[in-house]
Image 1 (cartoon, rainbow, N blue to C red):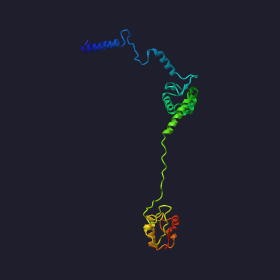
Image 2 (cartoon, rainbow, N blue to C red):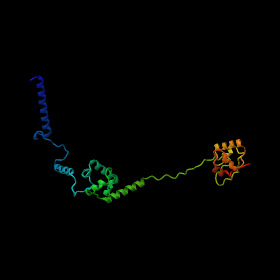
Image 3 (cartoon, rainbow, N blue to C red):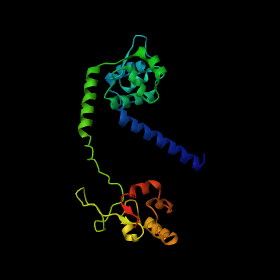
Length: 243
């Protein structure tokens, strides 16, 4: 036997003796070789109960068994036909959001559950304590209404082009005295812009038309000025004159 083989043999022997010593410390000298001790996962006295529960959860529902939508844990919901753990979690989330179920038909609000599945599950389901569920929902709606902020006050929107109070002929209210009509053939641009609907651009157009075509013969001639429609001429008829 070579020196390397002796070294390897001694190493394996040391590992074996060390493992045996650890077993004696951890399990005691009376334990059988290779014995296993449960480290508090399930109390020893409840092993039979745990086994019975596991068997029950692993088999499908019987014809006479019912699952309560308002009290069943996820394991019971997962036993329903065509309902696994992911869909059972979705049912629990919807139950919490709705404060419970009042009818089996409310399963339609669970993502992934439609009328067909509800019809298949209805014979295996029951709904308890619906009165308390209604009370919780009513209390929740009351809190939501109380927390809803009051609507903002109405805002008055002013339309139209504001007029400067310092311009000639401006009106500041119903008690203001009426201004005299403006002469189309002698008014300047600054006077024309005081007319309703006449801004700087239209005032320039009126003066340019007057310079190119001569004095206005009538108020209706304003319709010949580019950019002035007939409806505006109708509005200005009582506020302008031909002189």
